[in-house]
Image (cartoon, rainbow, N blue to C red):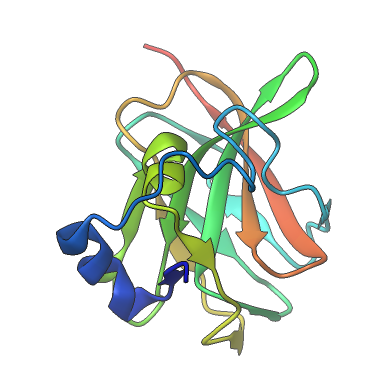
Length: 157
């Protein structure tokens, strides 16, 4: 049985180190993780739309949206999008935000679940990892399908 990524379980996963590194059934680092997403600025925006590594963006939902706690950050490539980070976020507990690199997420054999769901306009604070490279990125809601995404830019030094 694969663990699920729900906020209370994230700390347990960090301590337990559940992993199955030979399981390659899901998206792998560098793949496009969020394949069934659409952009709709009226429903989801990245604020601000230009940031630096180590800062944060808000995934803002102006008209409200039903969504889970999961987000992925993907970087634009010549061929589409490459998955780099997985993030759990809770609007009510910003100190409980957890960030994994794509490699850590796969190594721990974590699986997203769709709960608990938010249906609100409350933004989610999404940290921009210190090692995120400059370029065009998108933050995507997961595992909801179809999900939403918003593009933003990470500026270089």
